[in-house]
Amino acid sequence: MEIKLPSRMTPLLPPLSHSSPPLVSSSSSSSSMSETSASSSSVEIEDDKNNCKNIIRHVFVPNQHKSYKNSYTNSFVPASIIVGGTAFVYSSILKHNSCTLSPISTMYMILLALQHCIQPRISKKYLDRRINKKSVALVEEVVKMTMGAGLFSIGAGYVSRGDVDAISTKAKIAEGLKGWSFSSSLAVAALPAALYAVQGILTYTSYQHLDPVTFNGLNQTKMLTAALCCYFLLGTVQSAPQICALAMLLISGLTFQGTASMIWEILLRKKNHCVRTAIGGDSCTVVDNNGPKNYFKLGIFPCLGATFISGLAGALSQKGLQVVNGGRGNPFLYTVEVSFFSAVCLLLPLVFAGLKNKSKSIGNEDKIAAGYFDYWTRETFFPIFVKAVGGVLTALVHKHAGSVVKGFALILGLVLSGAMQTFIDNEKLRLDQVVGIILVMISSWLHFTNPP
Image (spheres, rainbow, N blue to C red):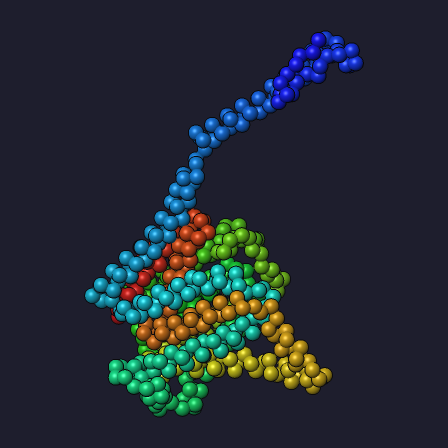
């Protein structure tokens, strides 16, 4: 007997007929039914487990709003405290009766600190590691020279005599170059440019033969050498609180970079080992323990020489900018002069290398020129432009505040880099970084509110 269904419905089972296959036995049907029920029960169990996991995750695990709140608390709040605290301290310094900073010098100092803060990030992102560093330095000097020339042409007359009359660009340049000569430029700007070139060579040599702890520790003494050179060349005297502030600033730089804790760790262990660097991670520098003469000759002495040359060049730059004679007081003109002589110092080795290869075989200078600018892209100019802006700001700080204040600007850049570290990288500040920030604020207050 067949069951008739409507045409739109399909039968659940095939109709029974004599030609249909025989029915399965009861044992086989029960086994298949048990397998089906087991599979369905396993699926139901998995669904229940997933539902339980979702309930537990919803109840006990913080949701997206909570995680966003935690990241906001861990990043934005510390960064705002650092920036707000820095602004409060320096605004209080400017309001102090014995303040040695002017608002314009404070502005240039903070801008230089910002440049020092963002420069490593931009350089790391846009500069290829295989790029020729000499080509980068050369183009940087050219950009800096162009930038200084443009700013000088705009405000030469106003900087030199403070005139607010509307005069032509040629008149401004003529007023700014009044009394200028190449011999005076050679005497005032060439020596700092050559000193900066020698400083770079000594710094690179010492970095190859010193561990990061010793290098960072000795490199921080450039602030003390700047104060010492300013005393002998310019007669700038530091009061007792200012000397204490400089020493505290040196300690703050060591503490913020983690060098102080690493020195303490090495003194406790009394052996050479891999140490944590300020940027992060472990760093091992191969030091020739069997050659103490090379350690001092190629490591300690070049590093100390580089720090002394840095202070000497800064004092000479300050003298050339603050002694207004023949356009010497214009920071933009001085930037053009120093950049020109620095570019000459960078070009001379390239020219000599080209002549040497040309004497051996014709056409090698083209290969040198090609390799000189390898791995360059359009993004390479981003860090070069920022570094050139830092060079102009350095001249402005030397003009309005002095080379010692530049040391405060560089350490303040480390403080701002800590704020950027918490806000952008979402990394918590270490204890030594917090202590270093506090020491920077205290030393700034002592130095700028206690003149001699």
